[in-house]
Image (cartoon, rainbow, N blue to C red):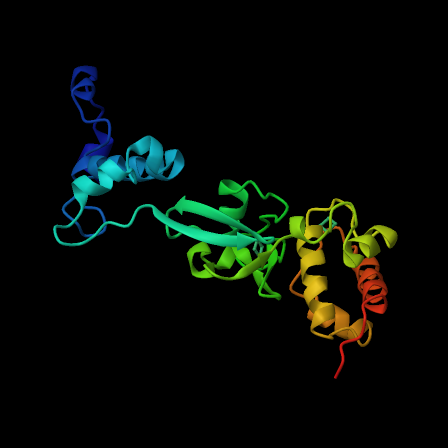
Length: 234
Ligand code: FES
Ligand code: FES
């Protein structure tokens, strides 16, 4: 039997013991770091993620300059131009900014929604040169010179786009969160001529999820809008 485990310890002896039982000296993952050092590092990392670079003093121009590798240019903020809904906008942002964040956070065009931020829900769908894309998966900076259309750019003044009007007429939404993406996607779906029947509409609108399950009404709205769209000449 283990003698240490069976022998009662004197209170004075217990008071002088390390409460961690010596864990501070245990190697973590084979590295020479102690448990205390490891926990400090984890806490620091969590704080950096939670507080963000601004509060941690990381990511500022000053910080980047002071830590820049000599001879290597530091790219923190880049100035470029985007054409959105027919209007030119100048942006000065981190070149890693997605198109969705540029729209929502920097230009305050909040019609495009952030659902998953992973290209899975379609809530962020916008049109780029007439083609639909998930703006959460695309960097804003690569769209210089493109014609970007968001939900805010579809109506002509007080006159709704036919797809917007059809969504209203057929109750193609409930909470409305997915609706801007659904409408932008439907505009392209009709332009692509992928509306021959319900199955085809469902297939070509399948990148846009609706948690409210308004799918039958969305399909009806797309059909209605398509029927009012002049046929393309061959
Ligand atoms: S937010 Fe872009 S696909 Fe979901
Ligand atoms: S209307 Fe609510 S998610 Fe589509």
